[in-house]
Image (cartoon, rainbow over the protein chains, first blue to last red):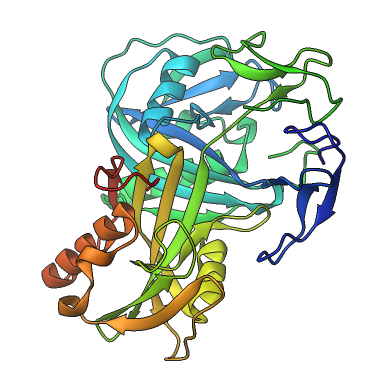
Length: 185
Length: 185
């Protein structure tokens, strides 16, 4: 909840603006309306000869757990460009041929994940500032009990199922709040 | 650009936070960082026996132009729930069986459109507060020169192409800034 208006410094209150149908944060002085909207998390599932690249997190939440390279999309970029940027920043890796693979809704934290299957260009990879370790995993090596986020677990399950079937399709799911950890998922 | 910190009312300046790699809005007093991220626009392409529902806009931008029901996704909802809500609000229509059909990147205005194909439940429809008119269109009736947004034009073209081919697939595109209008697209 905002305390001060970022335009005039006045007090911010809750109110339903004219023509709107839900409460927003509104400045009591200059009447500027502040909209809060969901955030996009974009990332890749980098493939190399049937193996998948994972990063071990060097930051909270889920420090030390494994994940796909992904992060908040930035202004002025496209979703695939953001996914490639995160792959570069977190894994020091370059990918190409991005195909949207999972759309995960996390309404409890107002996030949408877009994860793209992508082909690693080469075996150059190195942990970035937000990663402890980066490596390729065969399916039977995936650290299923040490994955950072349910959306990533969902994506990896669908990937190996589709790989066995020989056909990759788009998957969409609502990801519930994780029950076994207090931290946000 | 924010002028005042919404936490303490202090002055906001541009700066690169520790551990970050790009300038953000940061409070010079309490050092709160304010991240700005892209917004999601969610909507549907409602189908009824080969016909498509369009709404004529009763608001700016693009007052009087035709569009698919779509709007900014809200916090605490899923992308398909947001698309169904917009369809209800703008067209008074209920849809089911949502399938993601286009992902449009509009980096110049930091937006991502997610448009879902959806089946109209029945022929009940009525313009909401943001629409002048709502009706079904055959392909040869689509008002191609009076569409509100390039992302919608792109989506409708892909839809009729796929319908002719008999197979609907996911389409992704970068939508450039519209050159023939000064208004944001």
